[in-house]
Structure formats: C-alpha cells, structure tokens
Image: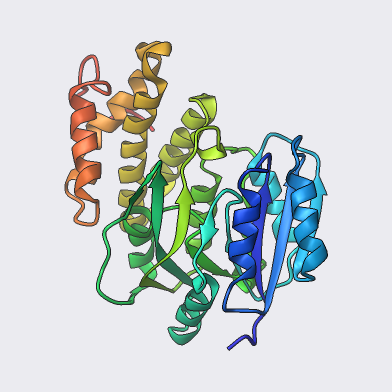
Length: 320
C-alpha cells in the first residue's frame, strides 16, 4: 500500500519547543513512502538545528532554508516548488499527527477515487481537547456539494486533508496568494476545490491541532484580517454559481462578525461599519443554511445583538 510517494509539507518558523514532537509523529507513520519536506522560514531560534538533527537520522527528510518574508503563503509556495510526491499533506510545525494519519487519508482518496480527502481532528486548548461533530462513516460529496462541506463541516484548513499534486500542478496551477499572510489556507482551498469532482470525509480523528498564542493563526488583529474579509466579499459578488455564492457569502458574513470581535475596543468601531452592515444584511446566508453548525449561528446572532450591531441597519443591500 506504500506505492505512491506522498509529500509531507511542513513550514517552520521559531518553533524550537514543538518541532521535535511534530517530526517524531511524522516519522512514526505507518505509511513509509514519504518525502518529508521542511522549510525553515528564517527562524531566529534553534528551529533549523533541531530539524537538521532529524534530517541527519532519516533520509526521507528534505530540509530547506529561506529568508523570512513575514508571509507564510510564500513559505508554502516554496514547499510546493520543492516536493515530488503524487499526493501531499500539510502538517503545521507546532502540531502532531496520529500513527495512521497519512495511511488512512491515502486509503480514502484511493479507494473512493476522490480528488480530496479529509479527516476529523482535535483542537487542543490548554489543556482540554475540543472535538468537532462527526458522522458515523466515510461519506462522499460530489461537485457542488464539496465547497459547503469544506467551509461548514470539515474546516477550511489545510492540515486535515490530502491533496492530489496533479491538480495542484495542473494546467491551472493552484498556489497560495502571496498578498495574503492570513487566511491563505482558505483561499488555497477555494482554488483547489474548483478542480475537484469528488471529496471523501472519514470519521477517524487523526490530527491534533495545538492552539497557542503567538502562532500565525492567532496573531493580534491587523489589516490582514480585514483584507481577507474584503477578498471573500469580492469573490462572493463575482460568483455566478448560486451554491458557491451562497457559501462564500455565508462565510464572509460570519468572518465580518468574527473580525469585528477580534478588533475589540482598541479600534474605532465606526471603521468597521461596512462589515457590520454586510453581516446584518446577509445574516440569513448562515441562519438558513442547514450545514452551518449551531454554534456559528449562535455566535452570529449574539454578535449582531452586541459587538457587530450596525449603527443603523440598512434596508437596502450595500454595493459590493
């Protein structure tokens, strides 16, 4: 079952405390035909030295270095340019994976002849694991069913999925947008899904996401957060497929609410009035969506009553 080479792609920046645990979990995988590509993105701690020790003991590890450009999207694109697998999986350098992580994702994408496969995961808030809802068995989704499932159910992240490299490097190569250093995984998945006809979701919880303050995903609020929301609004406005448009509008609506909350009292709430108006006007894209989890609907409802409440709810839709 180890016939196809699979690339495990790991961007690493200042993770000396966590990288060893991550690499040990990858090296113990039951699927052995791996190319483990690690890029040290200009770390100023001992990240490179730790990665070098592991690379010296296992020839499957390919260790790369690049200057830090303050943008994880560029590091991810760098990894894509230096990997050779038929499939790829992403692992964040401060997380770890179960023994069968690669094997079960690979079995799923092969046995179902799918373009994308996803697994369950655990999110670890110190010290408690938080598990997402799950279904009883592997399920297939085709064509227009894929995007809503990724956005509302399997998560918009990279690290609980396996991708086909022939799609990523196809006639229309799928790459990360270097203009976005936040939400780059969402935009990448949106591009990838455009080329997918079938996705399979398996019930196994194979990935452990380690939530920590200071990571790329949890940096303080900045204009990068607003840029992502504006991008989602633009994509939604330009979309002609009603299913895709409704999904993008729904996620943009929730993102408006979330980013307004992250901004907090340190920023003038008047500066976020357009986002608040958008969230209010498009709230039913979440409320009426059967795939949207109840907690998303509750957060949006609470936000529109408090921190995300528009000064004067508009009766006419704003121009996008």
